[in-house]
Image (cartoon, rainbow, N blue to C red; front, side, top):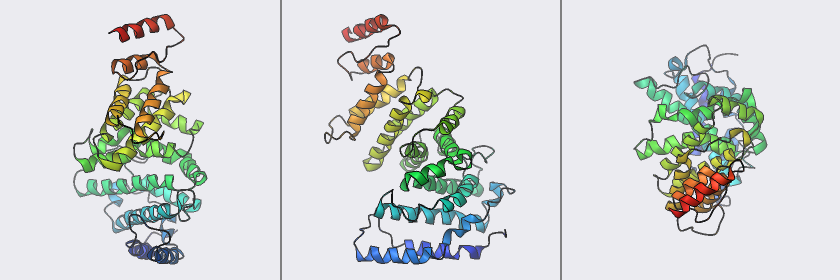
Amino acid sequence: MRELKIDDFRNVRALARTLVGVTPNPSYGDPSTVQLKRDIDRSMRRKPFRVFSFPSPIATTVEDFITTEIAREMVSALDTFVRLLSFGAALDGPHFNVWGNDLALWTDLCPWTEYLCLFSDNSASITLTPGRVGELLFRATESVVNVLHCIAMISPVIASSVAFAFDCAVIRTTVRMYLYWPVVYGDEPEDDSKLTRALVCSSTLPTLNRIMTYSAAALGVILRAVSYHPRRLYRRVAMHIRMALRLNGDARLQLVITEMIHLATMSSTPALRARRCPRCVTSALVAVLRTYRDPASGNEEDPFFVAYNTLADICTLDSRVTLHAIQKGVFTILASVTTLRPQRDIERLVSCIKD
C-alpha cells in the first residue's frame, strides 16, 4: 500500500469543520441537530476515516514520526473521531451509536492508537522527551486516551471485540495507563487541569470494565502487569479516589463512582482479590462517606451508598477491613469475621468496639 499523503486527510478536515456546529447537549428533535446529522452523514459517505486503514509506520520511531505533518493530521483525525462518537452517543446512547459500531473501522484504528500512545507496548519506555517532541507525544497520547474512552460509547458486543483484538492490545494499554500515568502527569498533580486529565487517563480501564466482564485473557493481562500482586491495583484505586475527591462538580462524582465500582468488581473477582486489602482502601471509602454524608436520595447509585455497600462487601471478605472501618467510626456493630480464626477476630473486634 502506498504511503499516506496530506491530501488523504481532506475529507477528515471537512468532517471536522462540520462538527464545529455540535453543541454540548444536542436535542434530537431540534431542526439544527437534524440538519447537522444530515451533514455528518453526507461527510461520512466520503469515508473520511479511510486514513486509518493505512498501516502505521512501525519501522519509524514514534519520536521521529510525531514531528511530521502526517502525524499532525493523524492526531487531528483521532480528535475528529472522538468528537463524532461523542455526538452520536449524546443522540442515540451507547447501544445505538451508528458511527461507532463499525468493527472494521476500529480494527484499522487500533494499530494507530497503539503506535501513537506512550503507554502502549510499542513504547520502549513511558517517558516524555523534553522539548517539542515531548509536547507532541503528550498531545498524541491525550488523543488516544479520548479514543479509548469512546469504546464505552458503542455496542457492548463491538466494544468487547475491540478490547480483545490484537492479543488484548487495548486492555494492555489501559492497564499501563492505570499503573503508570504518574510518569506522564506527575504523582498526584496539584494543577486541577492536569489532575483531571490524569484521572481521565487512569479511569480508562475502570470505564471499559463497566461494559464487559473480566475474561481469562483480560485477567491474565492485568495480573501479569502487577506481577500477580493485585494489592498494587487496590492502592491505585485508593489514590484515584483521593485525587477525585479534590475535584468539584460532576467530574468528581463520575470519577469517584467509576473507581468505586471498579474496586467492587475487583474485590468480587477471585483472581483479583487481594489476600489482605490495604488500609488505604478503607480510608478512601470512608473519605467518600464523609464527603457525601447527606445522600441526595435513596438511589443506590448515590456515591454514599456505593461507598457504603462497597466497604461492606469488602468487610465480608476481610475482617481486618472491618476493624479499620470500626476504628474510623463507620460501623457501630460487628460486621464480619473470618472463618479461619473467628475467636481471635471477635476478640479483636470487641476490643476495638470497647475502645
